[in-house]
Image 1 (cartoon, helix red, strand yellow):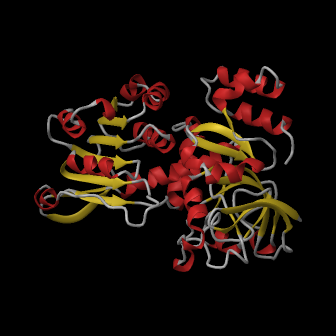
Image 2 (cartoon, one colour):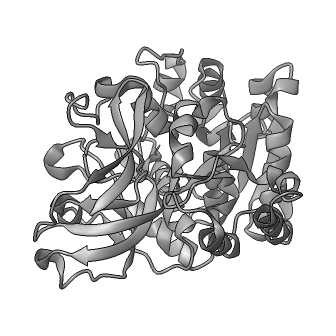
Image 3 (spheres, helix red, strand yellow):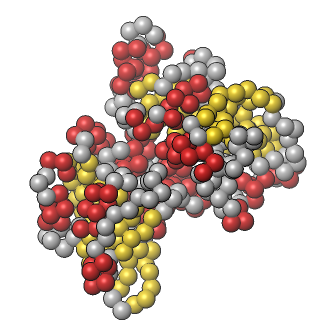
Length: 420
């Protein structure tokens, strides 16, 4: 079978190509991809090429398919997995397989599996590690978003606290504690707010900061103070660029005690250092946003490390259990990461979107891999609809849904868009 896919050949060298997939082996599964959301990690892989830890050294000869936040439908199941999976099943994949200690992952390391393709071959190690996850929801984009949501969930689980004189880490955020999400009005921050308000262990007080008023206003509209109060969380949004002393102001909101949990959603030195300054006793700083700069560093107050027991953790992705939790919470309607999405595109939009991702405003860029469509902001649907009836109908649907991408919109797009 032929596939069309975006493959990585080297630094900033992405190519949309059509090629033949090899014959399916008994321990493999053939699948079609429906959706993939583009992640900053794909941008970093494209920038670094073979220097990236998950990208093979020989991509100039054996290119890999990029994209790791994907979902689709199984088409043909090899004999080894025929009792566990069947053709027609919807699926999502946890790319962080940790197969025999390897960093290899779909979307970075393999020639025939990645999210930015029409068809893929799922290798045996994905099933062996339990990383091929059944999906029973209606919309494919929710399954794509389960991977970024698993990163958020993993970060919450990786945070920890201690008791004075007891050498045991109590994993997770502090229940009923104080939390700050810094630079938190972007797409991943929205996911963190959603999870903080609806997970089993919640803070009682949550502050979300950013330096962009438009993003803060959108976040406050999506996750309102009233919604937070219904979940027994006091929620405050603050633009720190307007403050003379951001750290002092944030700390004063806790009565000067500081925060139990602080999440950093931008790899920016002043943000990291502000996070350190607002930590309370036994406060946990979670450095969520991974930097591209291998020499990235910031100052840390070691006096507080010693006497106030402050500490720092970092996670790079979630694990399979985190992804299962994301899928379960979405299926139950407890979280809805749809608000992350601000742009829609087809497979032919992947290269320009990936290579220019930091410069494209908005949140998640969702790709439907079997259609042809330039990357298009949801906010532009109304303008485009004056000449295009497809965009006109999409605008009507989303206007009724507070301009948040929906299952109805996905179904309409897939039925009416031009094939790639």
